[in-house]
Image (cartoon, rainbow, N blue to C red; front, top):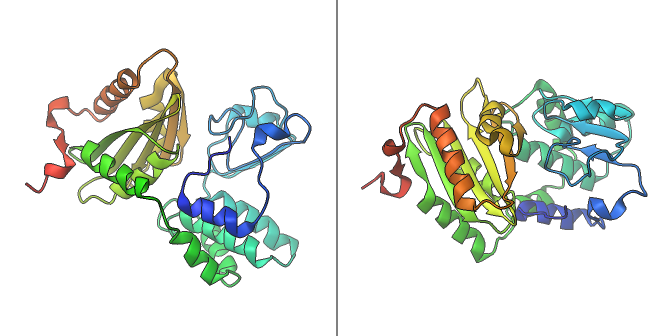
Length: 282
């Protein structure tokens, strides 16, 4: 819907130099190819029933995707950029440096530098692209500067975080951009002794959820779907997942409280065992 939240992603778009337009501005005049998302996934603004020419994705297959004229969905891949890189490599075409850099960054960021959800295809594509990367541009992208509000959001997350055994829950309230919860969940998962980091926050008229786990057997997608239930949409991979719920007439506090109870019930944790992260060292 036009929001590019992370500073790194904005830097990548600036580097590529393309005139990017919101999807809805192209409807219904152009054929639609969905990449890294699927019809009905909730993380794209494609109207229900809108025809899709093709889908290329690495999330679990959704029933609506089967109606596309062409679909290549590989949930075992760690990055959608790996699928695209495989096509380009097989074509024998010479990759422009900008494209190679963008695809390399896509694999690197989605897999945390081959540290999570990695298939052998991700490793091979990573090595193939690495020799073609604009190293200086990659450094600028990965170390993109951020505004003071970014650090304020991190401070809010630290203050909000509660630890229940090996589960951390953070309700960070109103957010400047929708994927902030995913960024914070990735960061909070580094806390010693934590196997699960679950963050939620409000963006415009919806509650956004991010689930991250260190467990090798995964299950993040199932956890996210259980937490959201029938209130909204959720999905994801073994170690990373997300969801969203429209607020409608309900208050943010009501929905976030309901989700917190579902999290505690799922992990069979009593509500009174939670400790504030910022007091764990006191």
